[in-house]
Length: 339
Ligand code: GLU
Image 1 (cartoon, rainbow, N blue to C red):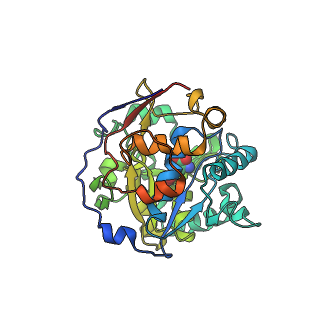
Image 2: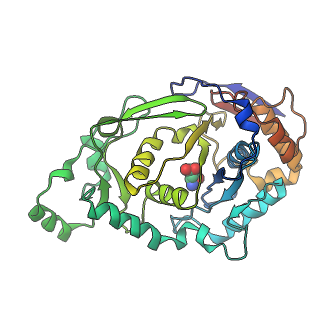
Image 3: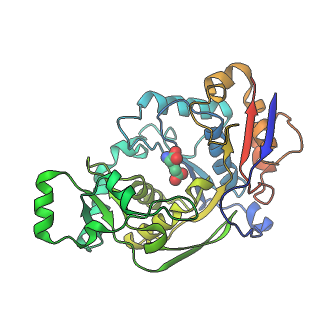
């Protein structure tokens, strides 16, 4: 049995009208992507994310790219990535580009792309946009106030003003991470679902990490470099990443690429109000694949997001045909599933 409730999404939105004509036009220059992290088996929330990015771009004749975001080598595993590809195939979601779309797809695994990220990191560093930060996480939390709208912690800028002598001294004590300087200016863009987004880069977002102290590049840097180089024209993902788009747009601007169109969707939440996660075992794909067909799962999601009035089975192809951004609700959706 599946029960759904609606919750208010914490973001303020201004809905915009998507041009239906434009939605249906074939355009192979459009590239959408799904970028999962292979840190476990997919669950209903991941399938929903995959379907939304797939249907959004496919409904306009574009191509769908799969990128495996296995930057965090300690948590991600190759076998999980292979399982994701198999689960997507089971659902009928076959990528046109990227991982699994060709025999040599290694360039679509972030774990193989450090050299590429390093090139852009160096580009930003040489332009004086980056600085070393020696602060520990607990020091940052004490020194900074969470940003009012989403609890995001704005870095206070302690290490922005260090002298070279101070830096030298600190380098003997600990390894620094690298942050990008955010200017005191407003960034504005129109999200396809949540409308006008406006934040001050310095005071609302703050200097953020592009390379961690362990040498790994951050999600924000890698995702932008990849989306830019892979020709991604639209980024469709959960609305928990709506505000981080400002940081990502700032990187786009500074590596000389045009930012993609963003379209965020409401989250699926578990009954305790948290985002669906791997802890919701009953919603993991191994359980779902035992009890349901792909059409059951896709139909359920279509119903949850108002693409059909009742819980009827649906193929991926039918989901694409039924897809309409205007019907997708803006409020997060609580899912109570009993398999
Ligand atoms: N790997 C990220 C995730 O799984 C992707 C985020 C994005 O779509 O930008 O949350």
